[in-house]
Image (cartoon, rainbow, N blue to C red; front, side, top):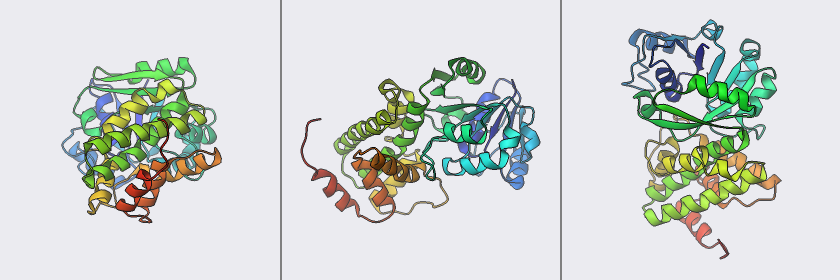
Length: 321
């Protein structure tokens, strides 16, 4: 079945390269005609993923005709833009298999990507691809394992077979809620881990932050119907470990800039900031306490200093683990 990737950011470009590595035809859709022409001419996305060469079997275009014949569409669109993207193209997307690659919670609705897909394209099969991965690793063929979540296990199995490659190993689950929330919430904790590292609070503090952050992820995810084993898998704990320990993570890098008081490129998408706000709203609705997410939102909005955030967290009442 023909595959197209909609969204030519770093991750979308990397997926197109990986899926076309063995010569299979793959479409890569760009929002900008100028970007599409530049990528097609140079066989490289220099703006987003420099150094990664696109195989000749990858077709690049900004026209919707690119994905007209594709049965599987990977939506590599930023989370806060996904609803609008789906709304404007719901007719073109039709009764196909739509695999969201965004990690986050929609601020306007409090929903994850598959719920947005279901609302805009009710006849489509909705799934999500998530887990510990950096675009550069995928594009260069380094081994990567991801979670593919689809509520219908039969559809999930077919997508798993279609999207797995020799170095891109996919594990499937029908716990879409857990996979989505794990991938979304870990970005919030990654910002906090970056703050801790940037402020030079030490590795012990970062380990404690990751552990308590993971407990926070579980608290809200289980309240929303996720399964604990999903959060303990690739899309939760696995992704958390990766993004909390590597400067290649945009969320970690953003937090590091906050903690060290250095500048951060405002053009870089940091999904964890919006996710923190959305998570706090969901937690309030369910009567839950999310101290790490609350501090991340306050730091990102410059409503609190790092020293004050640390004091606030450390002065919380002592309790059982």
